[in-house]
Structures are given as C-alpha cells and as structure tokens.
Length: 127
Image (tube, rainbow, N blue to C red; front, top):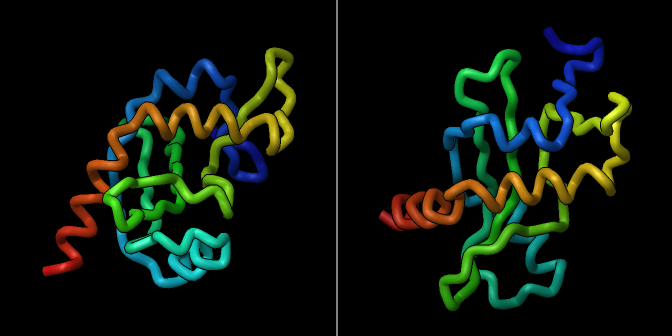
C-alpha cells in the first residue's frame, strides 16, 4: 500500500479528505532554541505537535513545530518544514518538489484545530 521509500503519495486535493486526529503536543526546549535563534524574542513556549489521519490506510502522519508568544498568540514555527510521510504529487503523478508541496501541507495544518490542542498542552505542562 505504500512506496519503497515509505511515502504515501497523494494529490493535494486528497489531503482535505483525510480526517486528522491529534496524537500529541508537547513543549520542547530544542524548538524553543530554534525560535530564539530565529529572533523571536517574544516566545514564551515552543514545542511540536503530531496528528494522524484517522482510519487512513496506509497511515498518514503530520507533525510541525509551534511557538506561543508572550501575548498568547500561537504560531507555526517555520524554521523546520512540517514532517510527514505524505509526498504531494502533481496531476500526472509526479512528486512535487518540497518548496511546492509545503504550501499544500500548510493549508492542511491551518484547517486543523491545532492551536487549541497546543494551548491545552501548555496548560497541562504548567501544572
């Protein structure tokens, strides 16, 4: 069901058909270091989150880094691109280069309620 390189190849329009569920969000000091090195001095928390395609066969996973700024704004941290086993393909079935595939992944990420999950993880780690 998957390719030899273990990527799940999908056209961009198929991404929106996958129902994703939250697996894990957690604070990560290494991500905080990345944010500070990217000159985001107003970062209060930083970490990563991972989501999985519910019932997707083969399994689809998507993870990315985030920051919570001092004013409470939750942002995707773009220093490292999203991590996924999805390879977005074009209409002919060819792999899109990373710089063309990333906008499709970012659109997918923005369609998920990830900011709420990140804030919940931050609250839990404070206690």
